Image 1: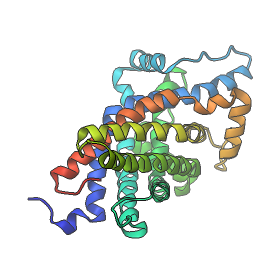
Image 2: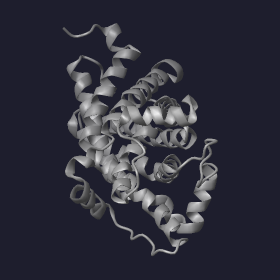
Image 3: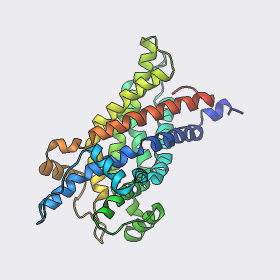
Image 4: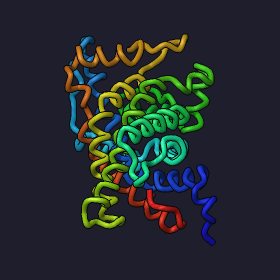
Length: 314
């Protein structure tokens, strides 16, 4: 039995639909996220190694990193950290998607002809993304720490965490509940940028295609719109993603202060000085390669789930 109209338009209903679609997309594309994380921190390790007496650590591309993980750690290690990643999306994507639609329909409102101004889409996307990521930051912190555990084992370093719940307990024991939000600002800045580009581009491009071409509201239109949304999101978010990953992966002293960076700006400046401006786009290829299939899988799944449940198209 399908839900009635009031239920289909509720915040909770859209939250559940978007979380379900995000789970599908996350499981399918997660190995690319793990590879991206390893790629982004290898320059950091090389910089540290260059100041020691040993030779600098070699740098590898995305493909070699992925093959190395599968060969040295096992194929299933490509999904290491996927559980907190799924939990994160149940919070993050559920909130950002439902919040965007709520802002679009009930706060900023559509124009009389049914269109929605692009600047309003940008504002709605940024606010929805920032809010969703703030609530999901604890799961994101744990996900990144778990993604690095396989590499620590290969380096002969002791594991920091054994599983997701141990990671949560470790953070709370060392830094308190507030420690779960370490790195929340670069996290939320990145999320605001991603959603500003992703949601606004998909929303605008999809409705432009429907209004100005012969395309219908089907999987072809959804696929084209998702490709544009993924590319726009990758362009604006990669620098913030590099900064976020490095801050969240750095060790902390007993007082809870990072031992490598004092904050987002310091991390940004150190990265540019040590590795050049293009280091801010380190991982752009895997980010887009991941965003493209993630965006495609998510939007096609989301639109299909909405159709099957009787909800209106996004």
